[in-house]
Length: 177
Image 1 (tube, helix red, strand yellow):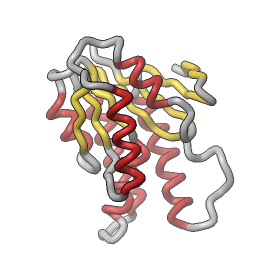
Image 2 (cartoon, one colour):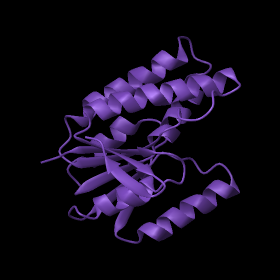
Image 3 (cartoon, rainbow, N blue to C red):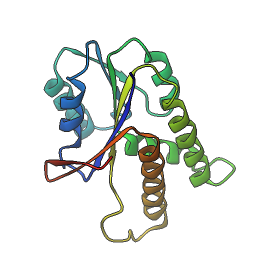
């Protein structure tokens, strides 16, 4: 039976490592759906290190914006689909909607609602990785505060839609749901 698993936590907390470990419990083939765009040398190096750590058993796809379509395209073809990460997807959406007509927050959260609804219709198990960004100080600029608010609301929606939710703190996972 397909499930949705959400893993959240701070930067470098061990979220991706836990997600990959959980994914290995499912039958091959394994799909890694990346939302990051490699726009600079530093990000290219991060992507290289992640691919190396995962190994050849993973099929990697990249989709920075239309995550639901990408999941639907992969559905049923993989034992598990790992999406890493939701917060990069949110920032990609926020920048895509920044100069469009309408409230960018509402546009992004509308996409998140559609995504969460779409998760319930999939045959493949999906593991989502997302950062918990609202546990620090209030950001000093409007865009950063908007992003923090969007990420918090998106994580709430995805946690409500998920069958399992884990938080990782300092490499230690805790199952919340």
